[in-house]
Amino acid sequence: MDTLTCITNRRSIRTFQEKPVPQDLLREIIATACWSPSYKNSQPWQVLVVSGEKKEGLSQMMVELLDNDTPPEPDLPAPTSWPEAEQARIDYLMAKRKELTGMDLTDPAVIARAKKANFCFYGAPHAIYLYQDSSLSQWSLFDLGLFAQALMLTAHAKELGTVPQGFVTDYSQAIKKYLDIPEHNRLVLGLSVGYPDMTAPANSYRTERSPVDEIASFVE
Image 1 (cartoon, rainbow, N blue to C red):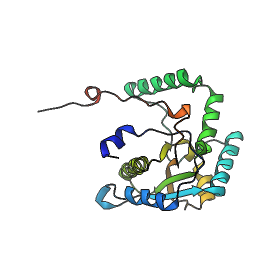
Image 2: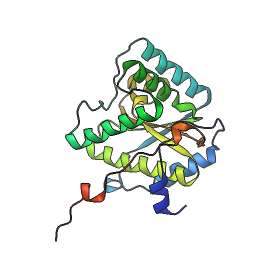
Image 3: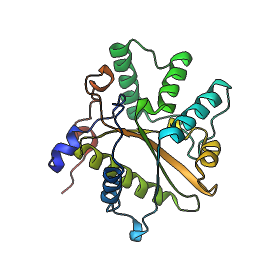
């Protein structure tokens, strides 16, 4: 797959086949993403791939925490407000998803079901957690974002599906303890990884993108 096609055709996948991904292929994807640029080549990323019984136990733990009304404590707090332009895009997405699925993602009950689907990694055979030392500056979050993008694009080029997930870091302390991630690290992002089920309605919708003239200026 050429680079431009890979970038423009990638989408977030929310239904997966049960078939596991060979570990050699997962290693190849991670190795490729390691070529992402970083400040002074600091490479401020750590990767943990979770599969099998360990992943199932992790999902069960997160669902139980949610059912027990345990307050989320992510290492990176979720946004509480957005500027007008960004909020308009979010509102459009929520309305479009309601139109396509019939689910109102502002309804607390629907939000709870959506979180549980996240916590079960949408049925993917593998979960990937990205984390880094919490003493690193905010700049290193940018570097980890570059790594995550490279990871997702490489997976797509290898005919795998991914979806980046913030919800699966909601209970960061419990997750780090369960996965033996040292407490001094910050849990930044989770991803579901596997072979996509492209027959599923959840994978048929692609989000829109703003036109260039809306986001870019040219000065001479």
